[in-house]
Length: 160
Image 1 (spheres, rainbow, N blue to C red):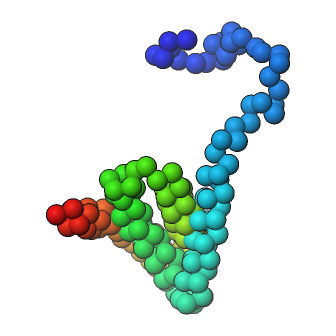
Image 2: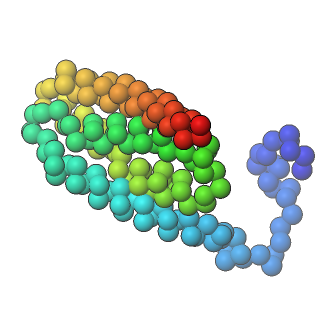
């Protein structure tokens, strides 16, 4: 099938079927090592998030500083990491899955961000909830940008 041809149900129905291929042949285990690396990184990132939450517990009506800090510092780290992964260490198979998907994926948390905002809204703290939602988004975007700019400057300085 040519690359530019789209695949739809009628195209799939016309594909040849190999009766000798079973479900065990279809499972792709060539990336199992990467999944293990992601899981290990996720465990470490989740533990780091828990530690930040313990260090900065949110009051019942307060701004959720721990989640805000986790998401914004994670955004900064992700911006810096992507510069390093793409520009400095592009051939490191496990670096991006371990740090980017695993550690930073476990450390940052969109679900807690939404849960915290919902809790603030339910408690009648609409202004705090919307400040938290908008603030996390804006500071997170700024943090990613600062991470990228900072990492690029550091890499340029090292290369000189």
